[in-house]
Length: 148
Image (cartoon, rainbow, N blue to C red; front, top):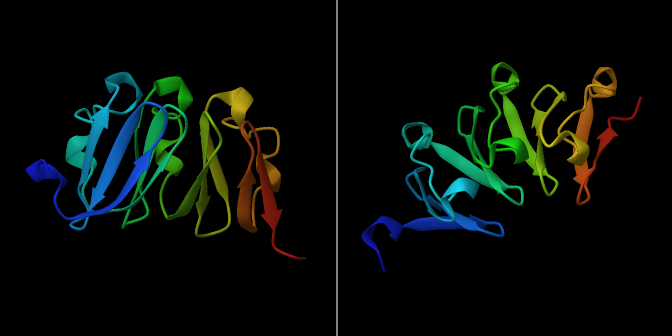
């Protein structure tokens, strides 16, 4: 076993890569570089991670402070720069094959990734408040709202 893979808490994977979350909150990745096997561009940010999620070609790390770090295939969730300022106070993350949805502590939702796979929620964004949880298929999200 490689020394860097000691004290692993969990491993997340998709079709082409792995991401190991170590007990100290650091992340080690391997596999096909363009789809998240190489996390060197964000490695300095992959500390204090509590959970890792994946689409078919990208990863999202939820940090202990509620922020999110993404890497892998840019159009498939690996690039969250367009919504980066909204990715704070995140409670958990859900995924389709090529998009992510972040459920925030205030019940709002932020999506990114391939728009045809759930990455663009702009047409229903005004309804995405007081969300309890999110369900997903291969290419769509559904939000369960709090009872009124």
